[in-house]
Image (cartoon, rainbow, N blue to C red; front, side):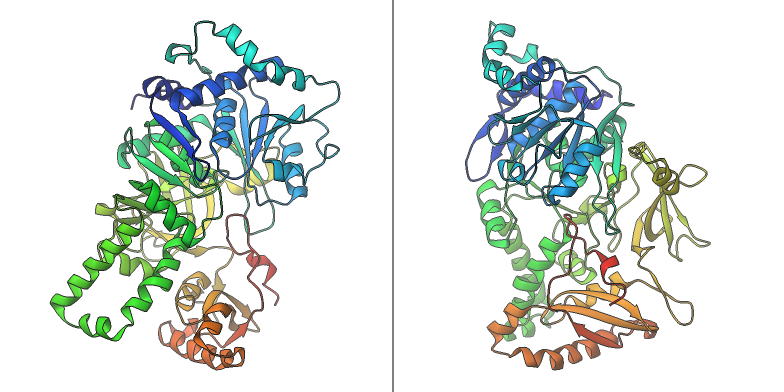
Length: 553
């Protein structure tokens, strides 16, 4: 790929792939070609100009994944304005705070979300536009958006009297050093910050994906991760549309049945996922199969075990639509037991690592080069170091610098300064090691590490990963209380009911789980007690547990 700016990638792709399918909304079946997307963008550019939106202004977008969500996003950045994607799971107060804090002048919103907001809460917005059909939902005082939108088709025809074609696509010439995205994090510390993502940050991700993931025109993808998060946006959407890929947006919660049906219909070549999806498949589909007596017996025989693993691999590939050649997992730590099994059956899966502040990628390796339990090799456009006396063997904070690193936090100089070292490295807050081949290994979060009685570093995430694979455990949290490790467990009540057990049996089952767990961890990692938790743990919109809420339980 040529060294062109992030924005010009879309001008080039839309011209080259003008007649090819670009986006489809799952369920409705509505499809836009690349030319159709470009036409919608051109109309929105007229709207922006008519309502006096200037390059550099902020425009927010909030709603579930959809073609029009992406069109609003692309129209904003290709105009030279700055997009502010907001996770649709944020509550109304947080949404209004982000819109106001970011100085957004327009909002594209799903109708249902707009119903939770108030005009009074958005005093500086020129108007709110529906993501259903780009109709006007509300406008500010002394604004004329209603008339502008009503006349939009007419103005479009006047501007392109001979029709709209590839040569009419012409986007902003701004450099890659300009701000493109303002992405508000949803971290587990309860404080949201606006990450300033530049064109070069996104270009770094696009270049790497082009060289290593290798999507091509006509490939298909199923987008089910939230596009307001940088991971889903970077690869399911932004990268895919630079290559002529046909993206289908699920637009609903990816429950297993819905997701498997969509995979069957879309038949994607590449799957971008979070670990939870494959951890659920392993726990609910694979473990029960392996525990059946004929299968467990056959696995003890050298030739039969190979055949069984081959059949499981084929079944999984078929469940993902039958054509997948690479599965990329990121966004959270991967359960090591699940990873080991998938690699054992030669499932084409690999793990990457990143963060919003790097738009998002820091490290990744394709399946053929992937080192088990790592999260890939540090990208060539990035550098990483470990704040440790022995970076290869003793975990320390991962610090990075390079093309993908953000410019800082919007209107928050204090947080920006705290996030960078004095010599300019971004402090990730994650603990890890780095081998001699530049493969990165994550151990946990620096803020969650527990110091053992004899000075040992205890990473609760590693203990939780083992515990979550034990019977009747949905999710868990390991915390320290009075110098003892306590595991908070939210049980799988549905599985308990289906098994014919009573809830009173859970205490005995969890005692057995504790015994099993403690046999598999170091002496200083042993759990003293399992406490049952009545509800799911409260999570961020990215489904990370808000640990800070449970530290004093």
